[in-house]
Amino acid sequence: MFINWKLRELNLKIVYYGPALSGKTTNLQYIYARTNPNLRSELVSLKTREDRTIFFDFLQLELGQIKGLKPKFNLYTVPGQVMYEATRRLVLQGADGVVFVADSQMIRLPDNIQAFKMMHRHLQELGLDPQRTPCVVQFNKRDLPNVAPVPLLQRLFVPNGTLWFEAVATEGAGVFETLKAIINLVVSQTQQQL
Image 1 (cartoon, one colour):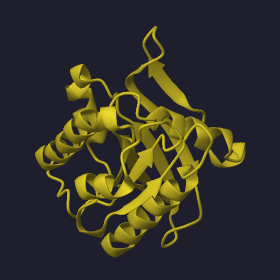
Image 2 (tube, one colour):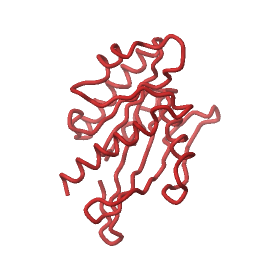
Image 3 (cartoon, rainbow, N blue to C red):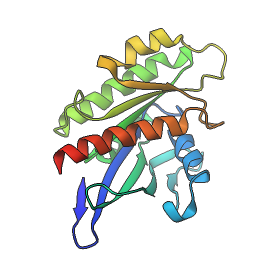
């Protein structure tokens, strides 16, 4: 959280975290395409030639007010590839909330587990308590064959009553539900801190 008192702006950071090709960027692209241009920035993506996110995606949304301050929600994605671990950690720094995007395909369970553990480790290294940091889990790609059953995904990725949603980000299913849930959690925690 960063407050610009001169402009009465409250900058809040939400990071979409998950393994490579789980749908993090697709979530932001869908949000960008369906949000009023007056309420959002341009979508900034830094990609490789193979169209994979190398550093991060960034989208800023402006919504309502919190205690007289105008909140700006800065949405980021981390690169999914393991070789960019340092970049993932850097993007996660200062996060007010996290969306963990899991690829629902059974074959991707090991990648999801590795990314989930890495996210928790990075949060701890950055001085953030994974149990207290607002987090929403999204089970993406539910339209594909051979997806893991939801109870298994819940057991692996939904500790202590964490909110979760099924999604098909390419079609927008579950995208705004996930976003609204993480914004509500971040706003609630921010109001307690102000």
